[in-house]
Length: 310
Figure 1 (tube, helix red, strand yellow):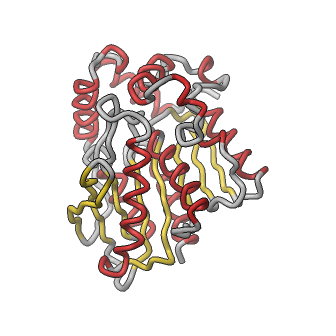
Figure 2: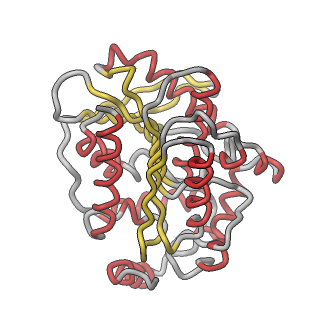
């Protein structure tokens, strides 16, 4: 299918901005560019009760967190959220609007995680911080006004990769019990496989095949790490992991591995909801409210969370 007209307009604006390709930047410059793009996007987010900054103890030091509290009263469920950015870029601020909208839509506390990233802290540092954040949330739930029996994990892109891995770790550890894993265009295989890497190699937004190769080089400690299920969760035994809701974008280099991950979960007997958004590109989930399907996708995920965490 052709690109959605709203995405075509967004890509024209991106081209007019003449931003350098991610793969031609240093990690520091790429981070600045992503944060600037998120700030320039503007737009209003859903109203919430407020935010607060926290930290969780981690193996590399304190892991910064941002808590988003919904307006709904009483003890609330919680979503532990991991931002995207190829495990190299992205921040609490770049994904602030997404966290706010999911907080309001799911009527849940959202805990956004500022995990360590490559190349300064290569794989598996991000995984270690993500797991530390989940164990902290489960242990501190009572003091946070969170119901420890109603927890979910989620993220987009690299963050969805971390959410999938943490869900597997929780299964293997016998807890914390998760009601849902919400995965938006996940990196499921750091081997960079799938025909969509050829179909959408370039010309479909900032996430090109070359950009994914750049992320891979900066995140993994060595090429062989791509065979580790903590980097490529599709390589794990998936039986018994938490139910999943998966969003994919048709015109995305990661499209095929997201579809494959949904199929692999279903084959392993895991309950899966999957929705593929036609004509959308990688990153569209964060383009609300300008892109109608971004609003629809956030509403879809929020509704799935609300059902699972009821």
